[in-house]
Image (cartoon, rainbow, N blue to C red):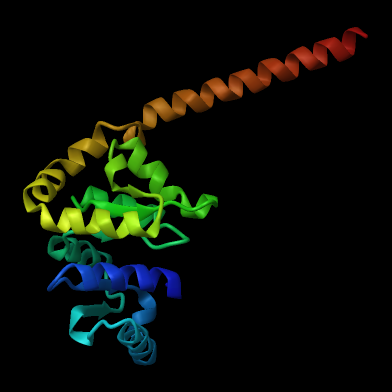
Length: 188
């Protein structure tokens, strides 16, 4: 978490009335860290009662928290690759902001692969707009959530056999190329 992502998240909270932000991470088990984060959000106009800050307790409880979550906010500039996949698997649409580095483009890759390009923002303004639209269109949000796991299962993201085949073909091409080079080298 950095000042840029906190500012984006604060803008989402300030734009969507009565919204709350849940952050669950090991570092929030430390009370001083939790208080410092509350202070950072206070400076951005977010009251502490709009924050749910939790330390890590167990993977089971972590997954249960998704049942109390409506929208996932991908961090920036380091997107949450594994956490994004977990959220999507649990039926939570994730909004991502695309950057220029690999670490800030993982959300783009994951969401594109499962056909959710409408959740991809290229500017901070788009990021907030997408969150607001989702929060205000509860019918669409519910439809997204209800079909999220099936969407993932049907996507290349979950096609282990297909990915394995692609790797096998890539290795075959590399081997064939190496053999051609070696044969040419030996024949000269």
